[in-house]
Image 1 (cartoon, rainbow, N blue to C red):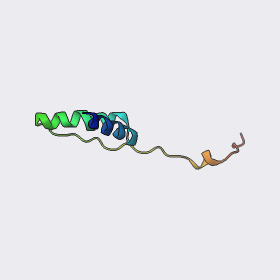
Image 2: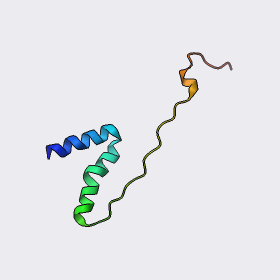
Image 3: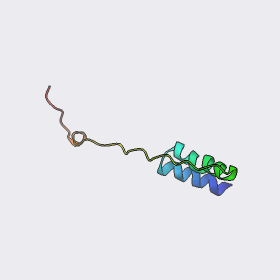
Length: 60
């Protein structure tokens, strides 16, 4: 049991808590019950704008 906890914490670090819960809790329970395993599509990464690098602000 402690190994699964560490694996779930690591999955949360790499993705997010919802994905970690699905991976460590919901999917194993679905397999044990004979249900299909659902995989959520990955969330898009946050985009950074070029303007956030610049130290000055645009004129009004």
